[in-house]
Length: 477
Ligand SMILES: O=C(O)CCC(=O)C(=O)O
Image 1: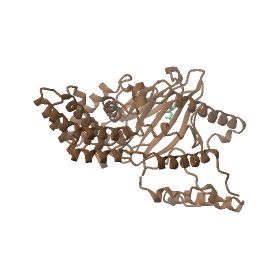
Image 2: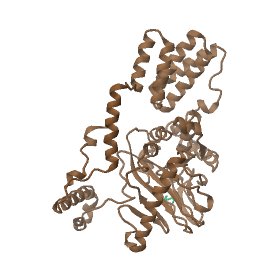
Image 3: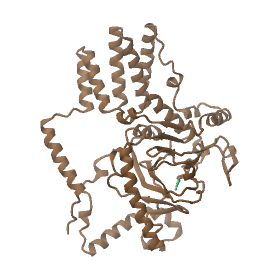
């Protein structure tokens, strides 16, 4: 029996028929089309028209570093020709945006060039110190004297990683335009790199949060009903008790959980690619964590630890993943927000480890680590943290549930072996202990094959359950 197509699927088909037929009548211009047209116009000497097209290109692709650089060059040339200082100023800021998206020597040279033009016109560019500062604090790592570097790191963490400073508010304009102001973007990079956590207040549209809240509440209610009937259903493939009264539940891959505005929000995507140092990212966990009323605090933990010993790499590597928590209700202090030990995502030599007293906990952590920060936040905020940071959920002392969406964005090569373990076949139990690790991954594939075979034996047409699109063979994206 062929699997009955669901309504969502029919909408996709209908949508694409509509799209194909409208496309036949209405030419759709891509960012690439506008860029190509702009280059032609620029070569023909019509810089003003080229600027218009470059502007359209970056509107369509606001994360294209080359697009911003192109626009900067056109503005610089036109600004010099017409002695238009506003165009020179704008050119400088377009280069700056391009550098935030991708550091590039040519763009840096262009910045110097336009700075010189501006000076010759009597203008002082980049008077804001922060704009000119390198946003990557950790780049200093290589050219340092280890002792001096640690002392300065400790000072900077103590100064910057405070409750107030790790928070940034997203404006309505930024939400509507889908892009953060340059200064805010740079600040968020600095904070996330240095402190290991950053909070964007009210990042998501209230309408999306409303739908997520409703859908998530149903997942929680169904789960709670299920464990009331059978307590063995607590830890399954799609649920896990994280600490007493705190449950992580996997979300179904359907709207609103899979909406683009949630999984690939334009305000966050550039930060993710910049901090992780790659565009090849994958969501690994898409779930929620709910702490029930009157539940205790959680243990301090890292979602995933460091990949290598500090002595092996001697530098801070980019994270293997970032986590995004999204409160679905206003999380106040008494509802038990998540608490972080700032700077604990940055590795240090063994000799720099000290004993730290964190509440009732005595932990061995790097001396440079700073204050703990708790992250109460309004609904629809995004609490973003490095997978390696030490954190815990605080006690929910209130009489309300505290639901957070929980999404992890991983480097494509990283496999999380800790949270939500893969399923193994029953025969895995008789594999000798010394071979379990090396055979675990292929045994998990075996488990899928076994399920397919079992379904086929029961008369289910397994191919009808599968996508026809062999994604990973078709694309390296
Ligand atoms: O509940 C929280 O605030 C944090 C949960 C958490 O960190 C976890 O379950 O891994």
